[in-house]
Length: 53
Image (tube, rainbow, N blue to C red):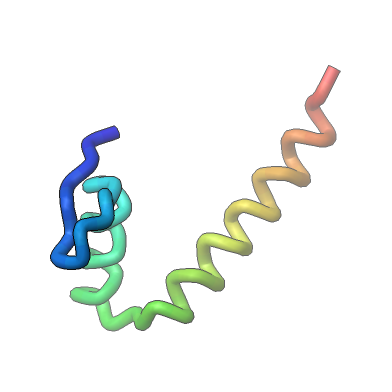
């Protein structure tokens, strides 16, 4: 994980910055990206519960 400073002196994960910038270039807005990440996270949890030992 590579952290970079932002204009308001917060550290940002460069992978997340790249993800958001790429999503914006594809026409997604911030709320759409949040919804997609939430759905992916929830579907990942479901799969993990089924395979947990």
